[in-house]
Amino acid sequence: MNASHRFMSIATASLLLCSCAMQTGEHGTQQRADSGWQHYNGGYDATRFSTLAQINTGNAGSLQEVGRLRIPETMSFQSEVVVVGDTMFVTTLSSTYAADARTGQQRWVRDHGVREGGPARLGRGVGYADGRVFRGLGNGHLVAMDARTGAVVWDVVGVDQPGEYYTSVPVLWEGRIYIGNSGSDYGAIGHVRAFDASTGRRLWNFDTVASTPEAARTWPTDPSRVKAGGGMYSSFALDPQTGVLYCPVGNPGPDFVRDYRRGDNLYTSSVIALDARTGQLKSHYQLVKNDFHDWDLAASPVLFTSRGGRTMVAVAGKDGHLYGLSRDLRDVHFKTAVTRVENIDAPITPQGTRFLPGTQGGTNWYGPSYSPMLNALFVPTIDWASTVKLGGPETLKHDPPNPFIGSSNGFGDQDPKDQRFGHITAVDPDTGKVLWRYDTDTSMVAAVTPTAGGVLLTGDTNGNFLALDAASGRVLLKKDLGDPIGGGVTTYMLGGVQYVAVAGGMKNPVVQTESGPAWVAIFALPAR
Image (cartoon, rainbow, N blue to C red; front, top):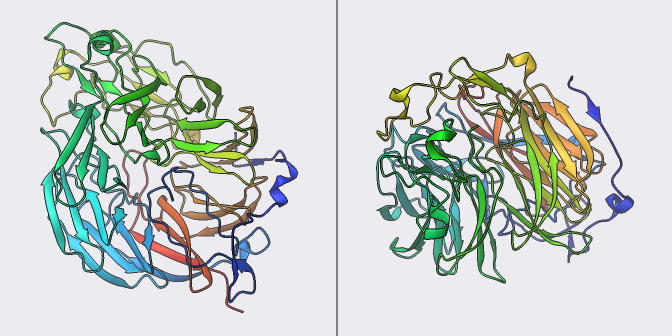
């Protein structure tokens, strides 16, 4: 495989434009009024689709950088760029930043004093509601801040024990904050919790390692066997009409020793649907039963209605597949491979077992997106194998926050970099067929954002900001920004100008990227 592009045509619907109410902007094209980006994935449905069309397939190649927020921190920068009014918000492990969304000029920064947070050592963004921004921290705190000044309104401890921390981004609805903890690989039990947005008071809890009688039988009953896992890493989707919250759940622990925890291990490596008002389980679908490859479902589900009239949920996990599910999670409409899949049934041995996708493969913190204009799903992936060696009894010591994974070589040895590939794959949700695929020789972990202008916006860990033709995968713009891109790629309208913000600078030893300090680059079309 090489860094080539393979194309198949999507239907002629690629020529259609969104018929939303619009106005004429200063660039002389029909546009919506000022439009922000207030959620991790754009909206409650998490599709990332933008109705903006000033930037389109005819002019995307002319995008120019017009501003930059420079962040004096070097780390694995994976934050979404949330835009409210004319202010953008991004996060690191220790700080929350606010900046002018046109120029990147910093408006305020809040240092939370976290220096040694969870093992991920990052922050993936903020939630917003009613003049406040909310985020979880690597020390397990949940914080509300005044969006105008950064002043802390309240600060509560949201987790229970060592090994639990936050990387996921909260969702705000009806005065509640929804967030899930991380820590599957460090002996923690995952939980989805709702908090009062005004006070931080906990409202309800749902444990993702089952304690109810029927689901508990999918775990060993031996009290000496520790139940662990089920952490959450990015964000959620929510259906406001039904009040149902859709949550992606991570792997069971210990990660690689399936005999330790024989059974399906509900609700790990699953998507679960909860009543957003009460926390009651409505439904679930388990992508991987008794997962022993560290194949989290890390990215948010996507909610949409296909052109064929199906009301669907799309999910993509680290197992290398994209799934199209019914909204009640009871039917699988399709399961499409979006990476190579090799040697996945072989047991993990002390000598080492190679499998693909590996522990860093498949889809990670940014998941599928959906264009209703094209009736197409787009999913970023890493296509990279790992070799994991089964460890001895000493690797099964449950001592949070130390690893509880059961291997003698951590999360495995990755194949050489010349055997690492990345893809953006477009899939028809009514058939599950691959429409086109963009291939590259590096990891694809950044957000993928489709627009009504027919453009697909993303970036790669070689440092390239990419604008693709969403109907074919053809490259419209490939601009080297110098550092790996692994965060949000957001678009919004201010003063009649459509902007694109790209979060770059990802120093990550696991994905094997080096970088300078983090930044957010802001792009727009040349003024006429």
